[in-house]
Amino acid sequence: MSKNIISTSSAPGAIGPYSQAVEINGFVYTSGQLGLNPETGEFGADVQEQTKLSLQNVKAILEAAGASLDQVVKTTVFLKDMNDFAAVNEVYGSFFSEPYPARSAVEVARLPKDGLVEIEVIAVKK
View (spheres, helix red, strand yellow):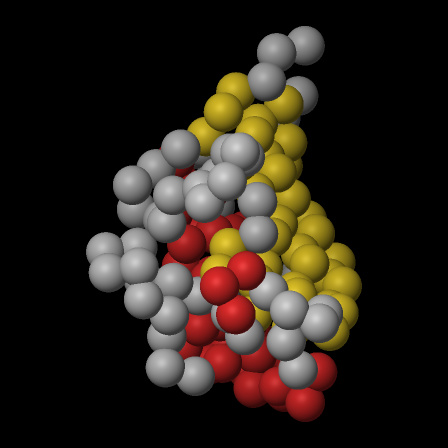
C-alpha cells in the first residue's frame, strides 16, 4: 500500500505541515479547503463566494489526482456560523448532482485565517 501525495498550484498551497490531498487504495482524501482565491490568496467577499472558491479548490485538487466531483462520496463542511447554512447549501448544490455524496456540516468556533467556510472531501477513483 503506497500513498500518493497530490499537489497543484491551481489551489492554495498548504499553510502547514500537511498535503493538499493524499491518494491511497483508490481513495482521494483532500485537506480542508478555505474559500481562498489561489492566485491572490484573498478570501471571497462573503460566505457564498468563499463556498464557491472552496469547492473550486477542491475540484482542482481532485482533477490533479485524476478524479472529479462526481466521484466524491463524502464531504464535510465546517461553518463559522450555522446561520450561513442555507447560503452555503445553495452554492454547494450547484457543484454536485444526484446521487449526492454523504455530508456532514458543523459549526466551529474558528477557522484558519478567520475563514467563513472550509470543505473537505473523500472521493473514490473509478
